[in-house]
Length: 274
Length: 346
Image (tube, rainbow over all chains, first blue to last red; front, side):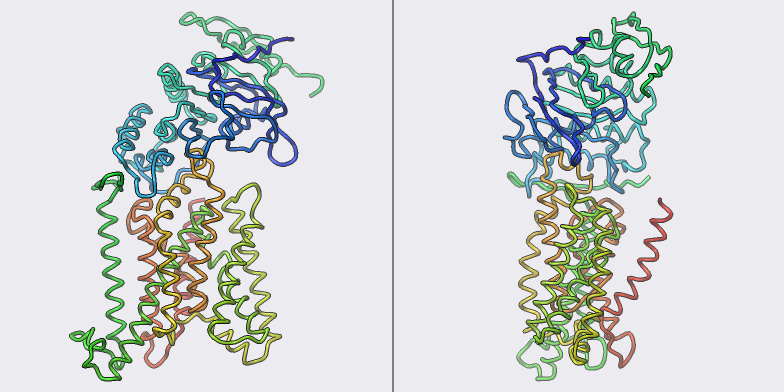
């Protein structure tokens, strides 16, 4: 099986070279290579506990590397200062906890930390970035509302507005569609695709392969801490890969609208080893 | 619907800019007036008090010796209450933010117990006097804070773990204090117990000025605190993603928070409740999330301790309670309310 494509060279905005990462003694990822193409929407897919979130944390510098290196536009991530890095790479972790009684605008403003100083907490530039981030995420009408009074879908979009306000070239989103109903999932994915069209590099961990194939330009499929395949949705989403990665027997058809692969699940493969 | 952000204004001056909320500004102004009123009451209340019409008369040259003494004793004690209350309020805001928990205040985490153990330890080895007690208290609370930090550290500090470790360290230190007290000479044990009640009795300019200078230096940290504390509120990993150096800043915060508690405890003994309640009360009265920044917890703390000290002095005629006893009673009620509320939420 030679599903693994060589990482695209030259065009990579963010890349990991032979990284080893984990929590404590047992590494979750070992000698892993990935490469995120510039100005694209990349979706990371794979079964639960395959190391998708860990990969995102390593790419965002939230987790220290046990080995290997991460590069941003060809420069070693270690060489960046915290704020300098945050201006270029923003990260939204999984299911953040909403602070009590904070308004939408105040929470989104927290995304400006790297651009602010001790006595410079709301410059005109901050104001513009916050308003524009709220508009992009579709929460501008909620600006004065308390975040803890919003619905799950609205809340998720407020968090996305926070990382948008950071105005970084790269956006890393860990399961941004979890707990959202289908229309809100589509909204978030359309936003991610739109941001990529505007030239930003977006990476999201997604659970739903069908939606990932529909909206992402680039897919990274992972299993048990290893990258099994990376490439365009058409290259990656195959019957063979679904069997290997998700233990799923499925038929693949083509979306009449845009040619994206559509997964029709048939049955779960029960392996002898399980 | 709570319109929490109604009436905000942005002040900009060259490179500097800051958001001002009307409600927060009004709350802070009222709190400040409350603190000033408590200072005035401290001069007036009780036997020998000044007349309302001649509040500052004791400072003038025409005042008799008695009047000057009353003015000096009462004002230094009242200023101590306000200043120390502000320190405790800030210390509480810092530790509650690091632990993301309204129970994670320095008194619950064992900083007071550490200071107490330090003082009893110093007395047990034969030292005595104001400086020795202060040194013991500062050492004890800083060592307690660092022990909690080190014991709770597991690739970074998580809030709940720190609260649990803090409660355990607190229990250990209390046990140590009991053991010292049993072993110590009766006089030393008595001296430690009096200190341990927490009182502002006998505060004079001479005893107030050194800790007040330290406290004023510490208050300058309010500038970075006003930026760090709200940012940590959004969660450690999100704050890190926005460019905050979360773990180093937490260590600095633990040291600043411990210093705020230590400077008070060194002089007045352990005073509980103020650090626990002030930041939470500040949030409730502004109806918003950190609307008042760090000014709220500081002013509420100042007002709480000022009022508690007035109650300690004048609530029961002819009985002078230690202020620590008053705050413990207030704090007990508050803690029950807080636990009931948290229990309902989860």
